[in-house]
Amino acid sequence: MFLFMIFALGCHHSTGLKNVEPFTECPTVSPYNGQLNETLEQLYSGQNDTDTGVLMLEEGIHALLLRGWLAEQSTQSIDIQYFIFSADNVGLLSTSALLAAAQRGVRIRLLVDDVLAHGDEFMLRDLHSHPNISVKVFNPNINIGKTLTEKSKNVVTQFEDINQRMHHKTFIVDGSVVVTGGRNVGDEYYDLDDEYNFRDRDVALFGGAVESVQESFELFWKDEHSVGIHALLPSVTLEKAEQTWMDLRNYSCDPGNFQPMFRTLIDDMPSQLLQQKESGQLHWVNSVQYISDAPWKNETSGLGGGSITTRELLGLLSVATTRIWIQTPYLVLSEVGLSGLQAAIDKGVEVKILTNSLAATDNYPAFAGFKKVRNTLTEMGVEVYEMKPNAPDVQAMNRTQIPTKMDADVGLHAKSMIIDEDISVVGTFNMDPRSANLNTESFVVIRDVQVTKEMAEYFEREMNADNAWPTSPQVDKEAGLKRRILTWLSAIVPSALL
Image (cartoon, rainbow, N blue to C red):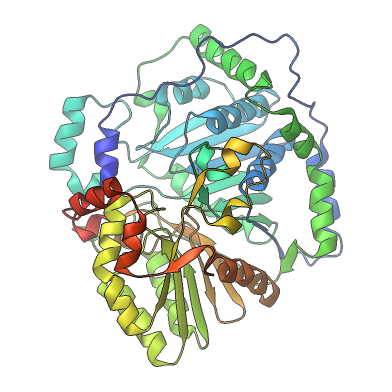
């Protein structure tokens, strides 16, 4: 994703906080009622202390509203890591929810990557002024607080460093619940964009493995590459910061921004969770592992070197005996990755991969890289499928009830894997050199037959003829001329940066 550097060199992204209507009473907010601990006690009832509750979040709106309820009902702390933290409608509502939690005494720690695509660094700086909120920036060498001259200089003199980004996506509440997976903060990750939405996947974890996620967050938070945002930007007066807080509050009070039906669904979250436990959708698993890279991906020189997550994924490929199924938005395999799949095929393992078609992708350089290995994969015996931009079963997963959102094109963003009948992997790792060698990544390994069976049903449906094309150069013609030209131009980007 070399284009991030060009994007980062752009100007500050303004938010929708101008001319916000004031609200004396807030019709979109329910009062804090302390439901979280009570609900968790009911969920944990009858379970082993060492087990982890596993709830797959396949639908975008469910993944968003669960985050919203957890923020509203948190009692102690919210710790967050995101690569993208947008200042669009979802981003502003999310920020307002964090601020509201801080106002009632919850400690908020937010760690964002310096790229901050579609974000607003000044709003986050004002948020940091709150006594219960701390905001840090990971590896701040390309964007926040940098002049155009400084950015340009760093592109030339710190090329390796600026390409090492934090790609983590974790949302931890009270050290007892975590939501992690493929989704960033932005409309398109939760089925709320009018033009293009991602098919993505998160997993909510309760108890058990949450401790490992918390330990990883602490490691990143305390690392020298995580810098307080106040050290990167001009200072702000408390009066100015408080105005931003008020604007965020009023923005979220507007039913035009926060639709009333979502308020109802959030309020119903405790009963939804208990129903999911009773129905078996919430699984209690005795083998859940969180794998995370260290804050600094690797200590080698250059753009290679591998990582903890890379080694662990290769290890999972090596133990497969019957199948390896993969969903990845970007499929740019190196010789190491190709060798891993070839070794599996030589053992008789079935390998299927779903990725984006040119008509569905959001990343032209990555697709140009995929084209270089497409024939190699099919000749090896890998079954590769490319998602359609109007995949009906994917569009049907949009449960927002907002017609303009439900008709939007779709593209794959889920980063998931199935090994044999009992191993499921959900995380941030794309099958590309950037995830293998540059960006810090994380994923959850769930060893459970039922979880894997249920996830496999989604894989099978999304690879069928209604939703995906079997890979072929001919499929590229389904995309418009503009997309084909941009992909051709993007082929100049070195594979190591994809």
